[in-house]
Length: 263
Image (cartoon, rainbow, N blue to C red; front, side):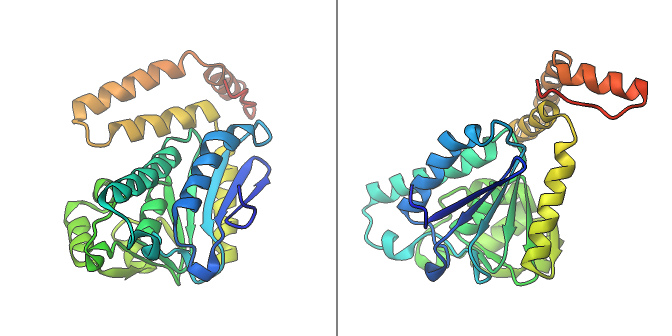
């Protein structure tokens, strides 16, 4: 993996992944997507053996990820385009399925594939400079890394249709108002610090329970209420099989802080 295209840093069990193509506004080409797959599939379980969360961001202030690499896409055949879309979807699915919380930290542009990458995180923090959008229709394309599948779950079908059909860009405050973004910050440092603090707070909870919650939420998307309740019931039952549940309840009854073993 190139040391320049992706930057990785681990701080106390929180892995920060930085897309590092600032001269190209961190655009996602096949190399970046392949390297992201490598990290998410191979390196993540090995980071200190104690991964508790991931921060996903882009290098510099101008862009989180300004989109997929248009120059690269312009030369693709239909088969190559399908393969490129499948690669982008693989990355977003890998992010979505991580058993730890993922926070996308967005400064500047998060357009097209960048917006789709951010939506694969559990939630999004942004600076006031952030700009979101799915402008693919202006290129004769559609969102191909999960935008059509995920945006309506974030903001509802009507907003998703308007944003995708028009290709309109929205600022961070509008993105927060419609539910795409959780929190907006004045500076990048403030945003990254708050993301780290949120993950530190989550790290005091049972990692098994957090993973079960994430899985139950993800698996419930698009299901009927009845099916979603069945998914939740199965996850609830599984929690009763864990050492974390025994420790958490015992600590509560003993009026002491829990020390979760993570199993």
